[in-house]
Image (cartoon, rainbow, N blue to C red; front, top):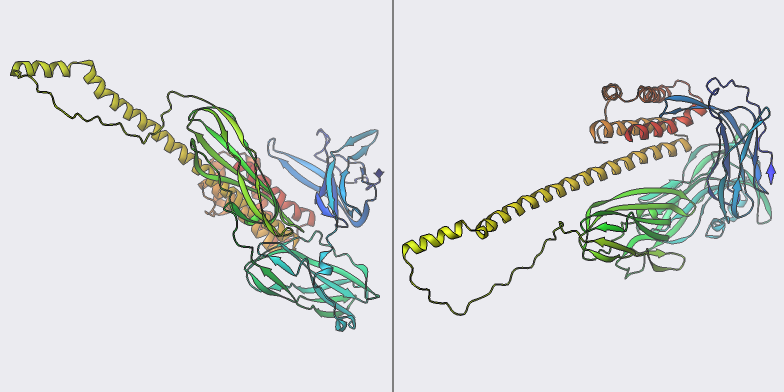
Length: 573
C-alpha cells in the first residue's frame, strides 16, 4: 500500500549536487522491534524534490519530523556530497515482517527511486505489568507516583532482565526534570535500550481509574552473582507547566538463581537461545596447507559474555595462534542479540579424504530450564599428498642385537690402511655425512618460515583486537549521544580517533598522541590530504563544542558517523 510519507520541496540550494549521480537512500531503524515500538524512517538524497515512500498497511505516523542537510566526504575521490534528509517516526500495530519502500524523489518530470528495507516486528513484551510490579492503595491516592517495571521477578544467573521507570499521573504532564535513575545493588552489566528520546504519554486504566502514564529509562541488565537484590527507587520532578510534583518511586526486588549443576563440558556460559555454524574457505588442499575455519555463534541472551567454543580437532590438524574474534552485538528487549565470529588458521598434516568434525557447544535455555547442546555441520576435505612435507615422527628405529660375534681374521697394518681409505672415498660415506647436514639446513629454513608465519598471525590478531577496542569506544560515544551526555560524547570521539591514529602510526592503540603530532606524522606518511583535513576538522569541531561554541544538532549527530568513516579509511589504507 502506498502512503504519502512526507511532501516537501527543499529550498536550500544544492551547491555541490550538480553533476553528481542522483542518490536516494531509505533507512529504517531499528530493523527489529516490538509492536508499538517507535521506528525512525529517513530518506536521504543528493537531489531536491518531493518525497513519497511506500509504507506497510496500518503504519501509524508519529509526531517527530526532522529535515535538513548534512555533508559526507567520499574518501575515495575526496569529493564532498551534500545529502538532504527527511525523517519521521511511527509504529506498526501488528507483528510480522514488513517491507518499507521504495522511496521516490520527484524532481520535475523525473522520479528517482531508493532501496527497500525489511523490518521484523515481534509481539509486544507485556511481561513487566504481571511480574511483581504491584501498585499500592497508598500510591493510588496520590496525584502522581512511580514504579519500577521489570520483565521478571526471578531469573537465572546470566539471564537478561528488562527494567524501566514508569510514572502515573492524574494530570497530563508537560515535561520532567532532575531525573535520578533507579539503582541495583552490586556490580552489574547494564545497557540503555530506550528507543526514542521523546517521551510518549498514554492513557491507562488502573483499578477502574484513568491515568496519564509514560515509560522512561528502559535498560537491559545482567546481574552478577546470585541471591536477592534490591532495586533502589528513581526520583524526578514531574511538571505541568510551571507547577511541579516531586516523585520518588517504590523500590522492587529480584531473585537471581544459580544455574543447575552438571553443566556439559562444552558449555560456553550462554544463557538464552543460540545457534552455531561453521565454514571452511577451501576443501581441496595439499598436505601442509593452512585453511581458515570460521565459527559463528548467533542468538540472544548474554551473548556478550559467552566463552570461545572448544574445537574438536582430530589428529592431523594443528591450530596456529589464537582466534580472531569479531562481534556484531546490539542490546534490546531480548538481551544481547547478534553474532560473534571466531576465525582460526588451521594446518592439515595428513593426506587423503578427511572429515573435519563439527563444532559443538552447550547453553542454558531459561525458558526450558535445561542445558541444550547444538553443533555445526562437519566438512569433507580432499587432501593431496605432498612429498616435500615432512611430519615429525616420534617413533624410533628398532635396534638389532647380535647374540654372537664372528671372529675376524688377522689383518696387517697395510690392509687396515687400505680398508680405511676405501671407506673414506666411498659414496656411502659422503652420502651419510652430507644428507644429515642438508636435511638440517632444510628443516631449519622450514622452522624459521613457520616462526615468521606465527609472528605475522599474532600481529594480525593484535591489530584486529585493537580495532574492536576502538569500535567499542565509538559505540560508547553513540550511547552518550543517545543519553544526551554531550561532553562525554565529544571526548569519546576524540579518544577513538586518537587510538585509531596510535594504531596506524605506532602500531599500538594504547599510545595517545597529541593532535598536532598526529597531523604532522600523517603528512610525513603522505596520507591523502583530504583525509587529513577531514580529521583536523573533526578534532576542531569536538574541541569547540566542548568549550561551549555553538553546534547544530544535525552537525553534532553527524560527528560520530564522520569519525568512524575517517578512522576506517586511514586504518584500512
